[in-house]
Length: 115
Image (cartoon, rainbow, N blue to C red; front, side, top):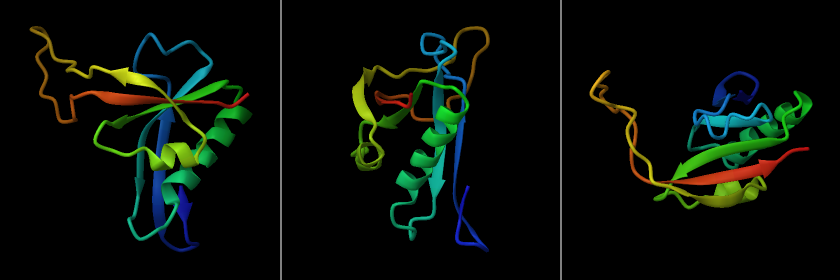
């Protein structure tokens, strides 16, 4: 969490990778990051902090995804490397059918080694 002492300015959430192909026991995935727009460099600060925590917990790699419409400036500022693009998609199937409430288009995969 990022604060100014009194107010919450931003939060970041990380956990086991959503993709079973990335879930190797040494990779942490940042799944959410939210920072009030008025706080300059807040996203980069949260990503840096998450990487320090990941390293302290024994993880070797941190991954995250951005939409292709995003420029990735915070990722590059936090020393993440662009590793590829996935095709996106939906988790829905005939059974169970789901309603997608998230973007289902292509996304960039960003990786940072922390060991």
